[in-house]
Length: 165
Image 1 (tube, rainbow, N blue to C red):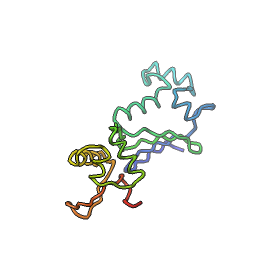
Image 2 (cartoon, rainbow, N blue to C red):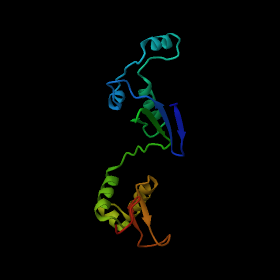
Image 3 (cartoon, rainbow, N blue to C red):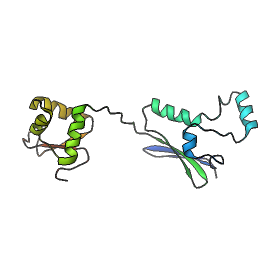
Image 4 (spheres, rainbow, N blue to C red):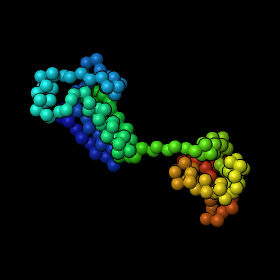
């Protein structure tokens, strides 16, 4: 079996023949544990400056994905192979304001909300409520359900959820 690199629209999968060294699991590798398979080759590669240090590869992959704001990579043993999956999507690092959490919790119970109801929930003016609702739409948290751009009965729902669900 050869090393296989599969490129998809949303990810790259690198599959390598062979499992982790005996006694190691994916969890232990992710926690920083390392076992060198061949100390002689490892020492020669280090002396030739072909590697900086053994046992740092997984941590460096995770750090690079994090620095690029990418979704975390996935490491898994599949049959007699080890696979690393690198995702193309950016991670969502949302810091929610208290009022956003309040509306999300409300929508989980009630499914939908009008602008006036949001204003009452937050104890703010309808203008402020509209502004906050638009910010939540921009963040991808909620969406509008309306029949026209000026629909007075438009409601807001959690993203990927329909009203009356």
